[in-house]
Length: 229
Image 1 (tube, one colour):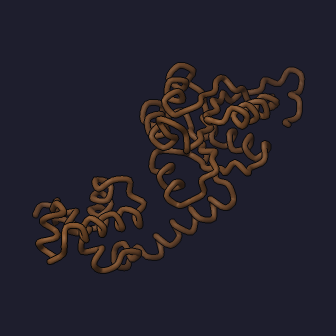
Image 2 (cartoon, one colour; image 1 turned 135 degrees about the vertical axis):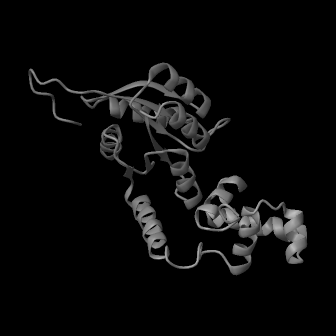
């Protein structure tokens, strides 16, 4: 718990919405944050759709967002909140620690990522940091994110997307040129099923949520049609 505010000292309160489909955990987090003098839980939600509605109505400073929920999950809900309410920080609070979940949440606009193993005091600190527009990550997640960006910088002068095989890079280049799978298969003398599998592998390795996102990444890296060509 935070220390009691000094008499005459005004405490700036951070308004929070807690989103989780497990009521015991959701209420436990809400109660723990409510014990903090500078934090106020103004609402809770059990799924992503309800979370979006709560943010529209309550305009909190921070949303603590679970990822795996029935109906609308945390990633699409985060994307909608980030687009409609850029002043509201979304911090993911989940059991999912795989790379796909982490980077999908960050691409959607999450400002932080914590695991549910975090202590209540750590969650409270993360809420305060997110309200100050800081990025916040749990220790294991932070190491992974930093390693990813460090390796990306180290590889920036090398061939684009070194995590891809030569064939996967070739397929990505053709995707970036706007070719459908059938045309790529004909160009590379592969079956269309093989091309579909290659494209799926490329999306997974680039942490791209869609073919369109992979095209954007590829063109940023210099693949695809030459500008003005």
